[in-house]
Image 1 (cartoon, helix red, strand yellow):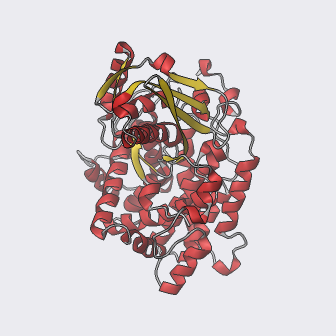
Image 2 (cartoon, helix red, strand yellow):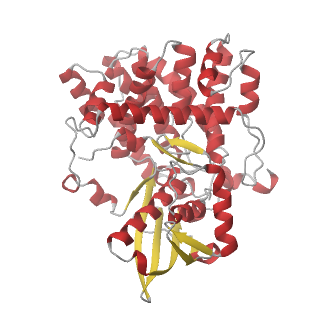
Image 3 (cartoon, helix red, strand yellow):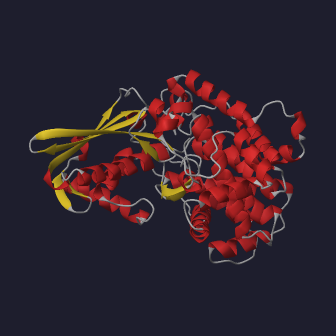
Length: 473
């Protein structure tokens, strides 16, 4: 059984895509570790990278080439000052030199040493091969970015075999039924069961510190997005909307930082329509930051990074003005566990399953987490997750120009609203009357993903990506 931590599902990184940006970045880091482990790092004469399938078809729009170069340079996506990224890339291009892991200067021409191959590798549509010339011979290493910043070298069939992965969690969970059984046996809510698993691999103090760091990153991302004007990069000339929405909604209460911003919203009289606008504003803000190579929390992907923070922010500024870190902690623990169930039973990669694997999963994660905070039972938490995903089944991934902008940014707002609606429906649902359990919708999502035409799986070969002329935008 595969153990997936909350911190695997909620990662801090740089936009715009967990599959196309964070994954290749991490793959480059892993390749460098391989070279060092094999004692070949100091012998590398030159390097070359081949990108395949979806990484190639939408790689330019997703800044995959930038991510590869940044990873090869040894930059960390969690800590790199994002404003330095253009300078780093510009220096590589102007000098045709890359300093591998910030240690060894090697000849590197991005135009010829990063190749976008349209063909697909057999295992996964997000494949990449790193090649090093060592003693005149080419040494290759293949990686796959499988969604949410996860990178593997093994095929999915092997990755899924129980004997391949040993789980150390005291309460190992693959399915919703197993999660409910532990809740019932232990008499604990979902968040507490997940916490007990996390405590088996790290101290609770460390858990709290990391969850606080994740929330701080989410909050800062929303704040930056709501206070930044202008158009997004990439050529579509998409105007940022979160700034105008925040200005129109925020009222007259002064503030100067993200925490004060929360209190200013709480002190603003919010009517029903404004609630929807605030939630949309929060979600748009995150994904506008994501689209501009800003720092976000992959939740469970970068393309869907706005849903979870916007729903949690909704709880803190609308539902419960006394909400505190304990509420944030419970929310993130529940969300992470629901996301892991989808990853194990289906996919969180749009290149494998379309946008149902990103916005659909993030909406399910947020719906379940909100339900627990609103007093729902473990059964109702899973009902909320099921409802949210049920109404995202079949959602395609068709980004215009390969950019994580249209329709991706708005979809986060829609996913957040659906999550809140799903939570409210679940709270009014008697579990005895449920016809579609969570595990059934997870299985259905995976079947839908396998049946979906590749045109609608983050390749920009169908849907809006071909229905709208980028030149007219």
